[in-house]
Length: 372
Image (cartoon, rainbow, N blue to C red):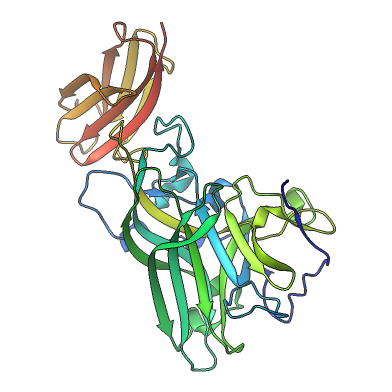
């Protein structure tokens, strides 16, 4: 039976310990692609960002300290389980570059033969140090249990040790201006079907220093007294003494109605997706494909590509669900700004196929359904 953790107070006792304060929208603080690692592989990175995909329009900051275990009202465990292949592939244009498992041609949210190549891990934090004593911030990747909770099996970790505050002006409480994205470079490849979760820890005995993470939520004006329950039940916390064991954030309900305003920690890995049977090396693509239609297709499949700036052949490949190439064609870009091609699918068996369109290092993939 599903547990619902109810917090039996309305104010959450947060004023004195600086645990939960609304900081508003955060997308203006997104890191830009030029600041991130680049890869020589001809593939597209996927940013797995559950908070944005959940439609969270605003955020709350929570203080974290792994040493607070008793009567202190501070979160001492924060984790996010990456149990769904979804996100976006362009941080500068994230709203229109959303991709999910279906876009990749997968039959489920996280197939057993999917590999994720973790490039980096971003977390939206604030930190002030007033004691001059070094604080330790730890980022971990742990495997998931069969129920998609985060296990204790750690596969990667990194840390930052600092005696000065990391936030601008050494402030934790100056709204969104105190926050920034901390980036950890990971370089971890999962095994087939292996799922990971990110855990963040803050080690500091001195309460004059504060470290906090942002969590996205849907506010009361859009339903509920505190926040709507998350569609992505992927985030976890422990909040002694009120929540003494690690619990899913979305199961924590306020006594007055609604859910805890801290359901999706803004923790965003950048990963590459690879499917062992279909051979996909791309999220959705960085080649500007205008149309692949109709879908489902009967006889002809039409493809339109923006060929401005393309000076290599455009290759179109069609693979069946086992990854076998059933069609391939390469042609030079046209001169009218839009490359158009038609694929004759009349002789292909009904079923799911993957269209892979590439030009040089740019690539686009999309699943299509052929019916006759």
